Length: 148
Length: 148
DNA sequence: TTAGATGCAAATAGTTTGCATTTGT
DNA sequence: ACAAATGCAAACTATTTGCATCTAA
Image (cartoon, rainbow over all chains, first blue to last red; front, side, top):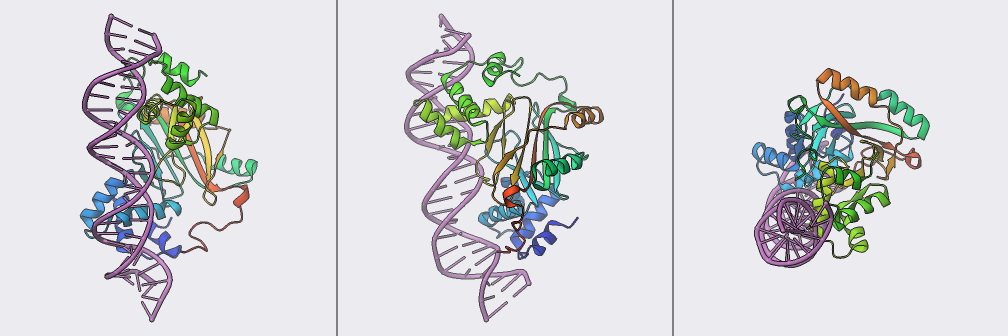
């Protein structure tokens, strides 16, 4: 699969310093960065790149399906994940609120079936499971045992 | 499956006017409302309920897995979907940016396998496909043919 | 009765915009 | 060369907070 930079170039966009810095930050972290995280990383690695360009780039990358915004618990700002092969899977621990990446993907067959049934053309997908991670298996769920 | 109100009650929370209004708005719309949509609906149906309570309720419902925030294109505010049976599936058309609900769910087997492999305990999931809907099958993708 | 929940308004945080200037191709 | 992209700072929108008051159980 081609890198984010290659995909930008192929789509006809200029490879500017701001765009390279944003992609580099995301790739370095493997995704799951908030806009603020990206902003901080970019400001450190490429001082002079402005806030607005970072947001414009995140928006562009999202429109091109190179990244996707997702939510953890913080509703105020999303977390961006890379979509290297058009898909991404993670779980969110409802106790400790960590993201845990899931590698396996068994959705190709389902995607083909949906295309056939609904008459649409799919490009990719994001799957988000939620539950308790290994560390929190025995913790009570929010709402159980913690009714404020 | 129990309703949102029942789930709130079971978890030990009070059934206040604000909470009932928020849940009612979401259930009436079948989900996919932004916080602003919910705010508007609630203000109309139950004047006197304040902004803060609406946000506090959306947050509570999210923590209890009664709803989940998701993204369309607008990165500035999420869209809340109901999780009536612990799961939700939709596609986003990358051309017209509509949400299209998907009923079928073939993820139970995958969930059980992840639990076995990773040693976690899953409660539910959200699946988001993206691609072109029936109306937009032949439209060029963002980035193709539209390099700004 | 009383802890939990609320409404308000002010504070904070996140994102976008307009425009003159710079830069990748 | 020149359209596309940028940086800046100001505007704007969304969300949270503190606290006195209210209310569901």
